[in-house]
Structures are given as structure tokens and as C-alpha cells.
Length: 306
Length: 327
Figure 1 (cartoon, rainbow over the protein chains, first blue to last red):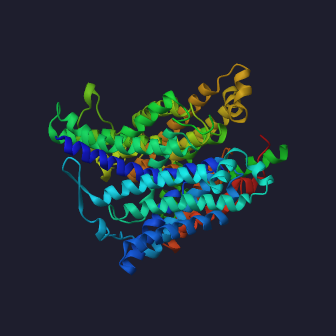
Figure 2 (cartoon, rainbow over the protein chains, first blue to last red):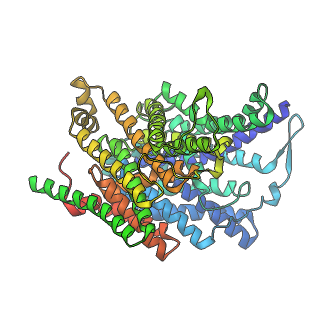
Figure 3 (cartoon, one colour):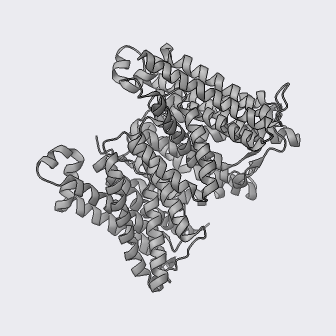
């Protein structure tokens, strides 16, 4: 086991982490501003991936696919916000869970109806198909590095959007007092639709970026959605900063756990057994981490309400 | 008020008779498929009654009850496999094909897991609780998938349905009756508990935890006990479900299962004694009839569910027996 391998795995963990951040940022933003728990966020991720795959296949350009994924996910988000989600803001969490669970069924079966059960494939764009040599002589896939950079750029962009722009000011105001900002003449309904579409676009972007690394298929959003929940629970629901730190922690812990645990167990178990036990334990690692965080901080690391 | 209660009692009795009579008639007509359908209804209803303890009475939206359902199922599968292969467990324990022992194991195993999950997740509330229960269930799901000893992703077959003293469990109607009687016992237990001091405290913990604490009852403990009971009942249902299908797989642990259990309660009517029963009957009928018409039945289930949540709160029992009393 070499240092190079550990660095590579850590970078993979970072890549996974920023991808989780794109998902978690939308979820936590929507919860923070509208108080809504949205299970269908994973479906918007799937919509983004499918839109990218279809548009890229039709035009031959991944970049057009990427633009299509943002547009399609934002449009799908705005559509469900106006037709369904809007009616749920005043309801309790149980109704929100059920209605968005129902939306997952509709999205998943609908997508399967249109595209069939076979996965679609997306190629890595030619520009990023190669390998980058990192300082120290370590080769690393350019595409994964690009995902990390996009994720970091989105994090900075979101920070600037929320802390520096007029829209961000309204979003923050909506978080703290929705009646007051309504009374001040801000159109809350439109604001909510915009926030929801923004979150949806981030999820769609995540789906499109991951598309070339995995296959694009129905149900791809669900594992990611649940990890994004773990992320925002760890980070503190409603906090974008918490989502970022939580996502990076979860991404790195999960990836390194899967890599290191079987090796560590290999010291005192035979290799095949160590691989099985290690994999099983590694799959539980982030949940144990979540439980530990909650044991000390029941509202997460950076709870918005505190 | 009185009349209202009587109407709900009538609806409940009607459902109980319907669920018993339909498979009996089907068995006499030589249609074992419909008996199996009714057995699924009874088992899913039992699992949802378990969830109803925390969701209906305690107002705690657990999105992780598939964990207990699956653990009950795996308890049955693992014990039966060891008995079939005559492999002993460590500590001199052996497998078994006796349902009574399996049920006990399922109750204990799911109870212990519910205690552990409850200890962490009940420290939180609201959305945190929903997401944490979901995450823990998912943890067990991934564990089951990646742990190779008991089938991993492929699941575990139970070659012969487990035995119950004096009953031929291979006969569909006999197995249905076992499930039905268990369901009725648990419903009676639910009704008794709801009207007990404990039930009052649990409902008070939902309505106003601060006030409950100020009269000297700690909401956390009440909720934890309810969560453990709830997990145990859902675990028992899981053991029955494994025996019904003679198969256990990680899909019993998946979050779709947790979602389905919540859906059952909502379709039937939240907080109602027979809500889960009505919900399970409706759900299986939807699945059967819609599934017969189109492969895409889940799409329509989703649309129906949306309509129920948005426009028809109160579920089937609310529709038949009127609005729920104030609480």
C-alpha cells in the first residue's frame, strides 16, 4: 500500500463528497427556506442524468447534454413545485414524506415507461478524457478532477449568491420570517419556485456529472438521496456550510473506509474473509459516524436554528 | 360522538369479517391464490399495526420500519436454514423450524435493534427523526447486501415452510388463519394499550411533550418503549412474511418497504385502530387489479397516493366512519 494509492482514494472521496454536496445543498436549502422534506430530490438527479444522456446522444456533445440536464431538472423542479409541492408547505412532515414518496413512484415508473429498463450510457467528454499528472507525479483521471473543481466552484457560487446578491438576501429573509418578507412586498410564491428550481438544477447537475462514471438508470437517485440525508443530518439541516462539510466528511470516510477496512482486517483474518467482512463493515461506517455526531450534537454540526 | 364511535366499530368489524370470509370462500372454491393474497394483506396489516404504535399514537414518523420487518424475516430465514442444513450456531444453539421459536427470535432480535436505533434517533425529532430512521434502516440494508454468509444480495430461501404445533402450515388457509389470529391478537393489544395509562402518556407525548414532562413523565422513555414494541410487532410480521414467500431478501429491508408501510397507514386512516388493515386490503387490491391492467401500476399508485394526501386526508376509514375525533 503506497501513499500514492491513499492520495488517489482521498481524491475519489473528495469527488464523491462534492457530488453529495450538490445533492445536499438543494435539499438543505429547500428545507431551510420552505421547511419541506423532499424525497423526490433523487428523482430530479435522475432527470438530470437522463436529460444529459439523451441530449448528448442526440447532439454528440456532452456540454449540450450538461446544459440540457440543468434546464430539464430545473423545469421538472419548477413543474412539481407549482403543481404539488406548493400545497405541502403548510402540511406536516408526514404528508410531505408521503406526497414526495408518491412523486418518486411517478417519476421512476414514468422514466421507465419512456426509456425502458436498460441503462443509458454517457461518455466522458473528449476534452476531459485523459489523465492529469498531479504534483508528485501521481496520475489522476481529469474528469474526476473536473468534478471536484465544479463542486468547489458551485460551493463558492452558492456562498456568493446567498450572501451577496439580492436573491440571496430574500432567501435568507425567507428562512427567518416568511410573513414579514411577504408583507414587505416580495412575491413569496415565486421566490419559493425559484429556490426549488435552483435546488433541482443542482441535483440535475450532480446526476449529469456522475452519468459518465456510472450507468444512467431508473432508481439511480435513491442511494444518493439517502446519503444526502445523512450528509445534511450530520451538517445540520438548513445549513449550506454544514452540507458542504458533511458531504466532504461522508465522501472521504466512505471511500477510505471501503479501501482501508478490508486491508486493516487482512492483518488478522484471511484475505477472502477480510474482504467480505471489511466490505460489510465499510458500508455501515458513515451511519455509525452519523450516530456518533448525533450522540454529541443532536441537531448536527452547524444547525441553522441554533 | 357516541354514534360516531359505533360507526367506526361497525366498519372495523366489517373489515375483520371481510378479511376472514374472503379467503375462506376462496379456499372452498379451490382458489388458493386468493388465500395467499389475503395472507399478504394480513401480514402487511400486522407490520403496519406495529408502525402505527409510533406513527399513529406517538406521532413519530419512522421511515425505517423495513429494518424490523427485514430482521424478523432474516430471523426466520437464518434459523430455518440452520435447521435444514443441520448447522449449529455458536454457543451450542441450533436452528429450528418451529414457528413459535422463530417468532420469539424475531421479536427479540427486532426488539434489540429497535432499542439501539431508538436510543439514538429518539433524541431528535421532526425531520431529523425521519431521516435518521431512514438512514439506520439503510445501513442494515447495505449490511445485508454485503454480508455474504446468508445469501447477500441474492437472499435466502426457506425450503419448507416452518411448522406450527397441530397445524399443517403448508395448507394456505391454515397459514392464513395463523396470520389472521396473530393480527387480531395484536389489534386487541393495540386497543388495550391505547386506552391504558401508557397509551395516554404516548399520545400526550405527541400532543404536548413539555406538558407531559411537567407532570413528571419523561417523553423519551415512553417513546422508546413504544418504539421497541412497535419494532417487535413489525419484526413478527417480517417472520411471517418470510414464511409466506419461503424467501428472505434484502428487498424486505429496502426503504421502499418502509415507505409502503407508511402508505398503508395513510390509505387506511392515520391513528385508527383498523387503519392498517383497511390500508393493506386497499393496497393489495390496487396492486392486484392495477397490476393486472398495466405493468406500470406503480405510476398510478403514485398518482392515487398524491390525490389521497392532497385531497382525501383521513383515508378509507375516515371516508367510511367520518372524521377522526379531536385530538
